[in-house]
Amino acid sequence: MMMDFILAKFNYWVYVVLIMIGFYGMMTKKNLMKKLIGMNIFQWSIILFYISIGSKKNATLPIIMDIHSHAPSAADYINPLPHVLMLTAIVVGVATTGIALTLLVLIYKRYGTIEEDEVIEALKK
Image 1 (spheres, rainbow, N blue to C red):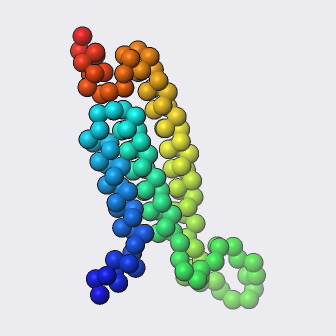
Image 2 (tube, rainbow, N blue to C red; image 1 turned 180 degrees about the horizontal axis):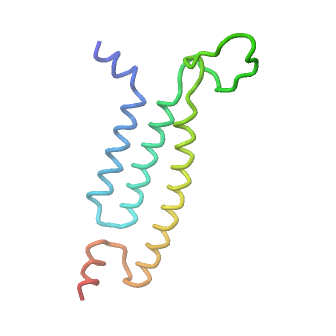
Image 3 (cartoon, one colour; image 1 turned 90 degrees about the horizontal axis):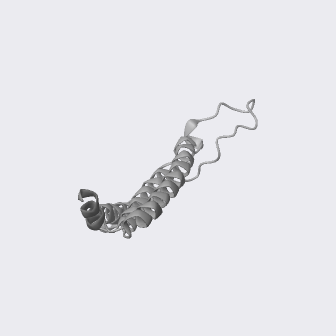
C-alpha cells in the first residue's frame, strides 16, 4: 500500500530530493560557484515539478478544431499555464545565472578567490 503510493508519485519524490540537494548546496557550501550550482539545481527542480503537474493522462492540446461538434470539456485538455509560466522562469533563470557568473568572474579578479570566507575577510580590511 505505502510502496504503491511512493511509486505512483515517484517523480515528485525525485523533485523533492533535487530541491533538498540544491538547498543543501546553497546553504552549506562556502565556494560561491558551488552555491550557484546549488541554486541552479534548486531552480530547475522547481521548474520540472511545475511542468510535471501541468500534464494529464489521456489529455490533448488545448486547441479546439471543430467548435460545432460538441461543447468542449476542460477535463479533456492539458492546462498550458504552468508550461507558459515555466518558460518565463527558464528565461529568468538563464539571465540570473549569466549575471551571477559575471559577478563571480569580477569577484575572482578583484579578490583572487571565490571562497566566501576569504572574500568576506578581504572586505573587512
